[in-house]
Length: 220
Figure 1 (cartoon, helix red, strand yellow):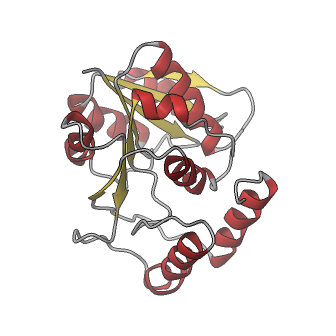
Figure 2 (cartoon, helix red, strand yellow):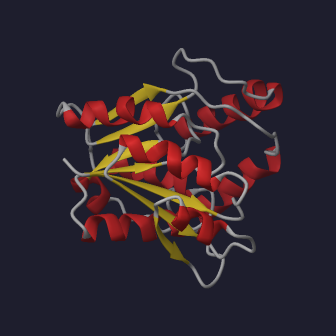
Figure 3 (cartoon, one colour):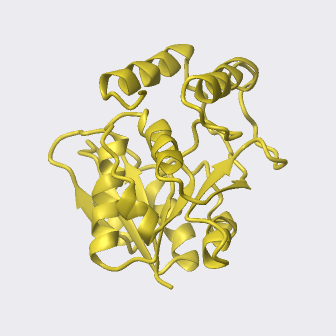
């Protein structure tokens, strides 16, 4: 089974070498999509052993993920792992993410910060932003997942072919979840660890996600 890890990156020169080097032992191929960074992300990712693509314009994380998915599918990846470039995820947990797919129990696996493993989640995010996001996804979107916004996931080849990411911004997380339910894919959640190095998310970011979902008519 060929496992390809797709890492969207924007101005991640500080972290990208460490992230790529950490991921490589757990997958067959690492693909970094540099979303028109202004720093040395492209060169450092390449030096670390990744296959690297660069968008000529900054198109957003969702677009970067789809570029990586397209490459992985074209090169016959059996499983595609989405992994962030900011060194918040643990590469060693990739094996846990792909296990349900390898065992034939799931088509898509979502990482969750709320299933037992500890993450140093900011208080404001833990007790206000995340509960509101979960309420919105359950009531409005009909998605019953414990973590509404998480970039660590794994997709089978079939799932990646059925889910095309159209939203370029941060609403791509919700779009992927919505389409997974709409396509009636077998869904699993796996507990993951997230290590926050900086805390920048504001409540306004959640409203932007909702706006993007409405604009792109993902909410029906």
